[in-house]
Length: 195
Image (cartoon, rainbow, N blue to C red; front, side, top):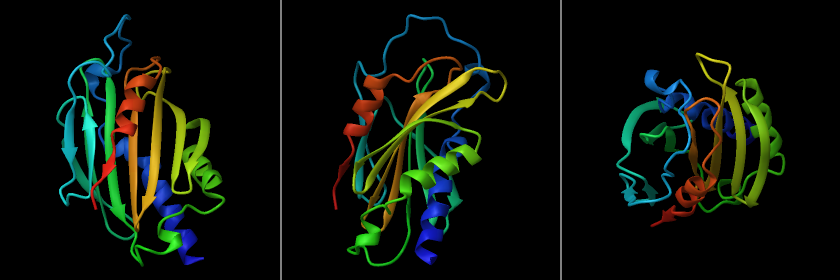
């Protein structure tokens, strides 16, 4: 039961991570006319986590976001918003326990339901949830812009590995614009674990 409570808290922290990573700024709340240049094109920079646990490619240099207290440890976050209004972010936190144990390397069977419920409690409309691997869940959702009735679309991939939860998110901060799936795919697929 304690383990389920920790996982539920981690799920809530993951869903709240987009709010905490500064996903919307004043100049980005209005619609931007199309066509647009995809951030998937061009040169990307490889970000290495401070503890050299993983690398992740961003379409620029991400900035550190103020830490938040997670259920067990501090949540460390980094993010970048491109000129055309795409937000790329990662946060990670340790959950304690044996890093080799099954419960610290595999999500519970009902994790998709927990993630969906937590997202809905936060006012997000869940489009789809997929289990990509025993320790990887991907969720796509929409939420209302703070200043308009336009939807903001996001995709988030959550990874549980060796007692650490990683939330990697990608989406548009411009209301009414769909997620650039090729940019998100490139971002998600660039993650490499070093340790």
